[in-house]
Each structure stands twice: as structure tokens, then as C-alpha cells.
Image (cartoon, rainbow, N blue to C red; front, top):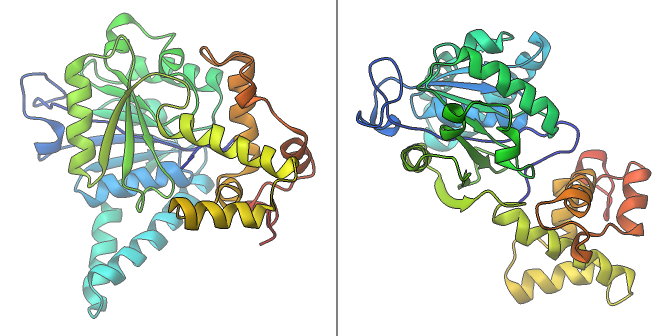
Length: 326
């Protein structure tokens, strides 16, 4: 399901072959290496989730955000999530639960200095706001600080990977990739590995190996609007809203039909509310206006119902009201 948020979007990951100081096409893959240094930029729910799963699999992680307050929130989120994992893993052993949480958190360093954190990283992943200019500026800065051998990755769910890398050198573009994690990261198994026309095959291979090593399942695709999941989900959700507008059925009946008739775990309106209606509007508006080959496509044309809900601040689960009340 969609993982981007229009205002805070935090998403991502990839990985690779490591030499004594960094990545190398001839050395052991990152997935097999004993020393793995990951920098995650963005301490929100997505970035914290990525940091957590990487640290759980024995990576050394540096989590970066603009303020200590944001980092503290990220740490609190990881701690709460890890405690849930520990209770399942060590159901009757409180000491083991505490040790597990402490050991994982000990592998995560918090900092507000992004360039310093990228300076010795094997992999740098950004999980920040879904704004193309902000992402481009960030990677332009990170590219100057990170080792030449490092792989740079974006966790965007809706923006073109090649566009994000536009300001980078040809060499950096070869080691740039999309790693789209899904929310919540600790639970969701899928990671979309998105390659551009410039991405080297060895980087793709290393990313796939890394994703598998952290217990996720990779799906490799080309750099296209929405990648795989969102490109299929957005038309589904938008057409569901149009069915509602035409009076074909109620939101509840449409949800029931798709859950019981198609075997979906959530109906389209439940999914819309979970993702965030502002996020959906943000993505479809962008695709309709300037999406790669999607401009003017009626499938992604916004509609009165969605626009009114967003205008009134009814964004779904996160605000307590969307198509349903919570």
C-alpha cells in the first residue's frame, strides 16, 4: 500500500558489495559483510522504521533529522516497536526482551549532522518530505560528503528516481537507486527496488541481496510513476471514489464487496483513509499535471469528493475522519 505522506513523507532502502572501506563490485556483498554502515536521513515513521529493521539485522545505523526533538520521537517510535517484537520473540523472558531492545538501539546513532553521518556510510537512504527540490538539494549535499563507493537511495513512493538524482554527477547517478519501503516498515515485507537508466546492474544486485538479508522481499522495477504498487493502487482507489459519487453503492458496501469478493484485506475506502486522503490527492494531482506520460490521464483526474474532504481537513485515520469516522 502507499507509504508516502504529502506533508511529512518518510520512506526507503538498498545495499551492496563492501570493501575494507566501502562498496566494491568485486568484494563480498553488503548482505554478507560483518560491517555495514547505514545512514538514514529522516527520523519520521518511515525513516525510523528503516533504521530499526537494519539495526535488527546487525547493521550499524546513523539516523539523521533536523532537530533533537525529532530524533527523540524517532527513538521512542523504534523503542515501542522493538518492545512489541521482543514480546513475540521472547514471550516468557522479560530479561531477554530488554536485552533485545537495548542491543538493537545500541546499534543506532542519532545525529542532526547529515553530511558528517554520510561521510563514512556504505549506504545513504533518504526518507524525508515528498518534495522534489528538497530531495535534490539534500542529495547534492550528501554526494559531496559520502564516499565515492557509497550507494545513495531514495525511499520516495511517488517521485521519479532519475529526477531526484538530476543534480548528481554521472558517477553518482550510476550508484543511485530507489528503495521504496512500505508502512509500517517492521511489518510490511515488500521493498520496491527501482532502477533508473543509469543505475549499474551491480547496484541493483546488491540492493536485492540487502533487502533479502534484512528479511524483506524485493520487487525490481523500472523508474516509472508509482513504480508497481502505487501505479496499480491509485487507479483502483480513484475509480472507487467515482463509483461512490455515481451512487453505485455506499463506501461500506464497496469495501465489503472487495474484501469478500476479491479477497483484499482492506476495502478501497479503508485503504484511502489509512494512507491519508491528502497523500492520495498530492500524488494524483502531480501525476495528472506532470507525471511521466500520465499528464491529462482521466484516471488520475481529481474529483469533488476527494477535494472537499482534504479541504475540510478530513484526511482519514490520522485526523479521525475521512470516508469513515475513527
